[in-house]
Length: 273
Image (cartoon, rainbow, N blue to C red; front, side, top):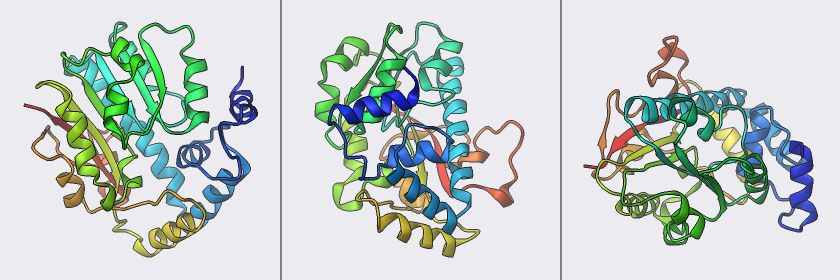
């Protein structure tokens, strides 16, 4: 089944409203994917017209994800990964990067978007040790108690909990710091949190504000650009690993990044000790 068929399958099952834009599918559009609908593409285009850097930032975030997952598995020895707000699968998926370093790595994807999960389940149909769960990360207990997670990940052993480009969709009144806390309290010492988060654009703040207004006018899910200090506060007592919480394209880049063109997003890895 090709990607468009999977999107249409989810639609035919009555799982989604194609006229309601989804952050996961807008992101897929910016990455050049096809698992999106006209409403998603309209928001994606209008936001990118206001801030042309958005598709570039989306690709930079995807590249950051790949570097982080490789480092977690190849260098830090992690073999269990929980990808929260995983979005629509595309090139360089977490399980593909992880298993290139360790063929026994186990991965659970979690997203609230039915198209994202329909696509992920089709992709994982013949892949043992990897699952996709339709769930809301704002309810950590429901995710952590899900039978598919429990049968795939051993929460008594270290886990990499990943929140790439998702916490900036959770407003302050929904307590994103408590969501992070609840997930990290459920995993043992030696586990990691990997995060990326949108930040104010120091190069063109006006364009970012215009894009945010365009986005907010059409999407029910808000976008909250937090300062690097606010993003760091979400980590709580976790210990950031070198190089710390930095612009995503400056995190272990290959080749070296140009700080003058850094993306409006920070990211890094922190360890539970």
